[in-house]
Amino acid sequence: PQPRPLSQMAPEELVALRDRQRSAHGDLVAEGLSLDVTRGKPSAAQLDLSDALLRLPSSTRDRSGTDVRNYGGLQGLAELREIFAELLGVQPDQLAAGGNSSLTMMRDCLVDLLLFGGVDSPRPWSQEESLTFVCPVPGYDRHFALLEELGIGMVTVPMTPDGPDAEAVAALVKDDPSIKGMWIVPTYANPTGSVCTQEVAARLAAMETAAPDFKIFWDNAYAVHHLTEDEAKSADILSLAAAAGNPHRPLTFASTSKITYAGAGVAFLGCSTDQVAWYLAHLGKGSIGPDKVNQLRHVELFGDAAGVRAHMARHREIIAPKFAEVDRVLSERLGGYEVASWNSPAGGYFVSLDVLPGTASRVVALAKEAGLALTPAGASFPYGQDPEDTNIRLAPTMPPVEEVTAAMETVATCVLLAAAEQLTKEN
Ligand code: PMP
Image (cartoon, rainbow, N blue to C red; front, side, top):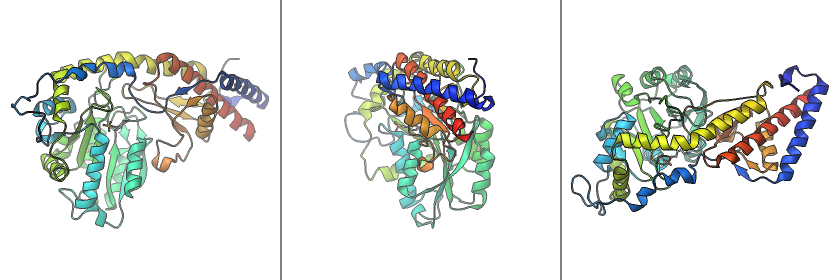
């Protein structure tokens, strides 16, 4: 039968649809599939693009003649910082290049803020009575887990296609000094794919905050991870904040985890030079310098910023077809029923699928029975709780394209079945 909205179907039509999906689901269970679209990892073919790293660096000295095998150089190699400063739209002296994980740098910054306070803090954050971060949702689960572990409370605002709802953020932070910061993934957000516009960034950079040391944790993990030729440019949050008289408000992060090797890349912190000094002063008590050998081999692999862009185009060739497949299968299988909506991201690593409210956990459970691992429903919300039970994050980069097809066929069956179950129960 021609698909039409489930909400318009007569009870017997719904029951028939439910039974067809039940039988399709039973077939999937019997097939014994083993599929996984849970985490945004690069595929082996993507990792292979950087295998020249295994034979680099060809030199043991950096541009200034320093032996990279030795201690020192806490801020990271200047030539690598120059390449990424250009890509991230900051100045090289506003950037520190570190180890392999930007998430670790985010954690370091939070812990330093708690223990010591920031350059603009009246006291260490841990001495405040209570601490809260604004969290755009759906968002990145590890951001929320990090705050939860550190005892920092979370208040949510909606994500829009243009970034976080800036007016909602501004209203929250204006009068409440316990709200000390916010998360944002500005470019190709995890999981909605939203790109923060210059206008939203300007509002966040300039808004009045009751806390004098409010921080925007600007996690630009997907700054150069375009899926189309229309390459989104990240808003220049550091300049916007400086121009608004809040130079220390943004702490920006990025890494090569999804450019070279997810487990052996280089991470970056970009912020005011005072805050770079603040970060390095604390880091310097626990490190004599970063892995400069790894940093130098990254410099040799890329050469310059154009080298990084060319490299990202090769990633795009591998993963864009997988995203296209997600969209194709979901459109073909779910179009017309009005039980789900999803985005077609122009970059990043995720598709955010919204199913009929109240059915996301059921969809994930049905998928599991059919041999498909989906990210737990609610994962993209603080404390793992999606108040509407509607959102599911799909990560199609890791499996081969045939498995993406099979996974999305399974998703479609489970979404329809869960929706039909719910509506037949209600009738
Ligand atoms: N931030 C975001 C938004 C991410 O999606 C990820 C990876 N899933 C990370 C940070 C992790 O970055 P890193 O590998 O540099 O720690």
